[in-house]
Length: 225
Length: 220
Figure 1: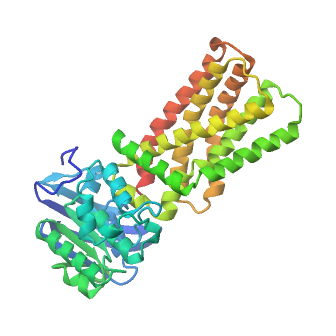
Figure 2 (figure 1 turned 180 degrees about the horizontal axis):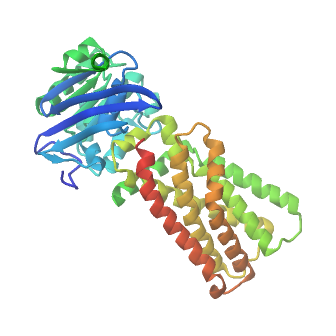
Figure 3 (figure 1 turned 90 degrees about the vertical axis):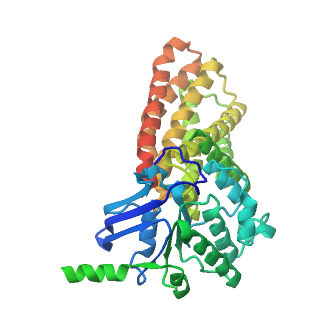
């Protein structure tokens, strides 16, 4: 992958995410093992499984926020392997354990993130309008409701128009209007980019065409043994 | 990388202005310690060795209180993921290092200013004294920043910070105290060149090792 890709990288070639025998353990406890998949641009995949099966852990590993215990996970852009330190440029990420800065306003948060990413501020207003926070953009985050914070996380994820969208329980805390924003974004991203949703919610699963079931992965492994 | 680091540093400054996570604790510490020294000294005058030792003790504990916040507050509030998803590890470390270095300079300027006013410390070679404090500050902030990153994921952060940083900082503190003593006495450059070289070398080694180590600390 080119070393200095722009922060906004919607244009260009399609990407492929390939996992081979991914295993993650915490101390001696195996969370999941030998997970294999290959996802390409234009796909939507739900990661499902019971509580504690490792849905969030797997999505964190895909986002390069955690390192797998064994196995390989690689992202390819135009057939070229993306360096680990550049993976963040491809990723939009929403999760319950991601928090933005309470001491700044919604607008300031996105401005700070744009500055850190080295992209301009031109897209901020559009993104805030899209998630329905434009009228509250100058309020400090600490007075936002949990639903508004969730909307701002979605704004954070789509701000740089990434090629891969990772959503961990994206509709939690959202009202119907917020859920429809997530639906729109999911439908847009699965057309020409990679969309992955970690969820057990029936509606969120319905947005995806494929499924990685971590329960099945474990049971298959047990059968093999 | 540098532009991203500056953006992170700017974010930390604005955050500090609004939250005062570090500044309030630091100001209280500095005022209390300097006041205790004043009350216990009375009108007595200390030797150069005692003054240098006391100054660096205050500097060490003041920075122990303040500099860990750069990573600890990100981990405690769950905002570290924002940085991980927005920039490379090297940029984050550089941004935090710049912030901590600037904060260390501001803290130490205040400590030395108050110390001179309260104790009437007479520094014979002010230029070399400033150079020694400046170089010592760089080394101090470099060590404190990487240790802050290391302990931010631990459970007993408050205890770990001074315990881990003290042995690492011992060579720097000894050289800085020795050089500070000599500058207070008015010794010329030639006599403290060895100490200054040691402090500079130490800082370069720590910063280089920190950049290599930080990627591992940051991503798991």
